[in-house]
Image 1 (cartoon, rainbow, N blue to C red):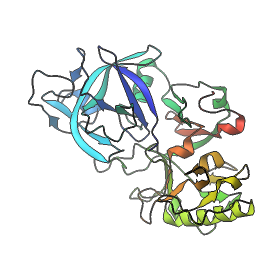
Image 2: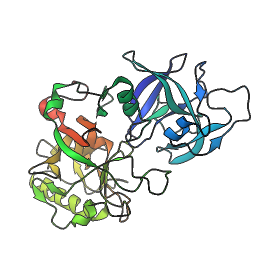
Image 3: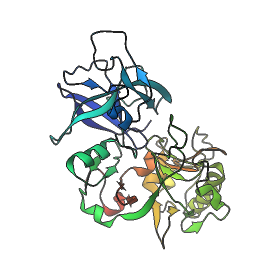
Image 4: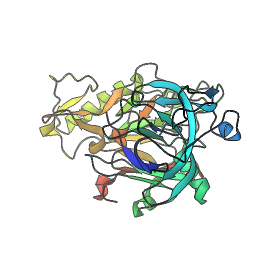
Length: 373
């Protein structure tokens, strides 16, 4: 399981919380079993703050005295752990959040969870930091508090190195050369819990077609790339998925085209390998700089997101590398889900002011990486 976390400090004790970055998460939640703070406060049921966080009902706790994660008459939150696919109701609370640079956010909303709910997180992580398009996500609160534009960028590292999460502005000269494409809104929520009529908080873009080494997948119908009136289809970006998942009607022709282009480039298939996820695997000794390039073709003349070998090939053993795309089935909610592995060493900026996604493609082509920006 690929997970990428950032560190924040919370409460009067400045407790360290390593929170997994979740582009589809609505807010911060973390394990409070060993958390104490004299400055925490529950969000009361029916309060204006409860309306702001879109609270659901009231929750209570029989234990006393009140402590983080155990209070009465508290605004309810539907808390989702995407790495366990578990949804529970818990109370919203407020406390001070501290960033590594010393900035602090008073009365920051979060949900307190227990150890069992937190299972499935990466070793060392104790919570999830939601970065979706909500009023209580970190980037929105930072923007409102400090008068910054509501935008953030992520650069997920490879090989266990350090990456970057930046909120409110540019932090690298690379940002000036990013390619831009519009963010689009899915009219139907894709959250685990939602009110009918809510739009999705996740990040969608318009992919018009896919190419392999410049050749379009001619057999793929364009309807798979569009979002229908029920919110089905389209392309979203997700750190919940390890690898990009494609509708079967996209995945199969992509795999065929990639295998043919790879064969033309001298890559030998590893036909004896049967992998649980991947269908196209190769002898790693034959995988070199000529790995076929996969292009996600975007609106605009010549605009595309190019996925090179570092993000398309995954080593399953010392001798075998596989095409790191997976079959999402014949009836997925979203036709294309760009996964975390395809985002590694790509600088990606989410600009909510101009509703634009900006991206670099692989920084390795510029002799850079997310750990060297």
